[in-house]
Amino acid sequence: MNEQMKALVLRDGKAVVESRPVPQAGPGEVVVRTTAASLCSADVACVGGEFPTPDGTVLGHEAVGVVHEIGDGVTGFAVGQRVTTASTTPCGQCANCQRGFTGHCGGVAWGGYTFGVSRDGSLAEYFTVPHASYNLVAIPDAVSDEAAVCVPDTLSSGSTGPEAARIPLGGTVVVFGQGHVGLAATMAARALGAGLVVTVKARPGGEEQAKRVGADRALNLAEHDIESEIRQLTAGVGADCAVEASGVIESFPRAVAVVREGGVVAVLSSYSGPDDATLPIPLAQWGWGIADKTILSTFQRCGSERMGRLLRLVETGRVDPTVLLTRRYRFDDVERAFADTAARMPGHIKPLITF
Ligand SMILES: [Zn+2]
Ligand SMILES: [Zn+2]
Image 1 (spheres, rainbow, N blue to C red):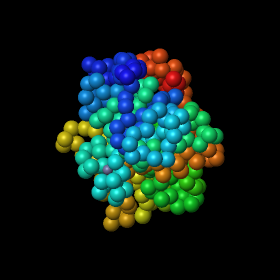
Image 2: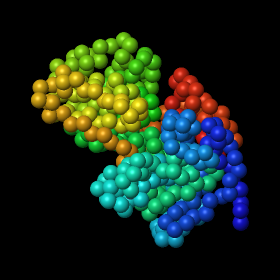
Image 3: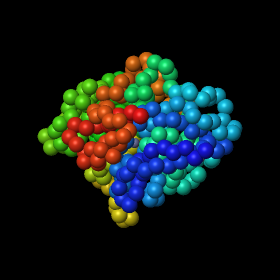
Image 4: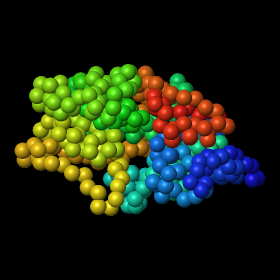
């Protein structure tokens, strides 16, 4: 019964491959046999002690596979079917989930973010999806594993900002940060009908990548006066929306400054710092009367209905997230994949890990 599998585990401050028993599906759960996965800066943060991941936890939250075992109470799926889940796996039933705030599932910190934090993650030959009726989604036949693996975190997290900001058709959007989430936000802003998408990053480089996913202009703080360039690009009025995906505190007042009166700042970053750290916004950045600006702090929107919509975008070719997969590895080589991601190799966005 105790069949074994390989998993990438947090062990003594390192990411190491260990043998584990293949999980069994409890009530409401589905066990998935993994066929492709990716990893990201959040996995590096788990290993670096920035997240409350206990020693011995399986890492990872971006994976696709086929249904291996279906727990009691889960209907609508069949063994062998291709599936995935968003990287956050909330219950879908508590008060915060019903109110649409699944990132705060259960009213606790890290509520919906369980994989690799409060339960075993998906960088393993098999993984367990909790609350599968809410979280598990079938992958359309026309969507490859390679494309689908970009949906659980990259596309779902990145698109949450532009979607929450309700960009007016033809409106202007500035995306701060061009890591995988910022690049996906750029892609989503374009797909949601933005008329002008401007990206901002700290240093030169990556302009081609930004333009490839939908940026019209790719700026950087080292070479450009961002506020003045955006004013010029928007005939002096500012952008309709800014998406803050850089994770850098100093970027927050810049995002507030570049949006026009009544504009929206959608914050995808989870800033970290000491308990007395603050997010300052000088009055000049707001504008007179706080300028009717709205600040939304948005955590990844998830659940099978939303994942289905994102997979449809990929299926019909509206977005192609595979351009973000910059390196390929077999799962046997996952420790090297992790080291390469942790080293922040120039030009490397996301690894594709196949099983
Ligand atoms: Zn991730
Ligand atoms: Zn919940």
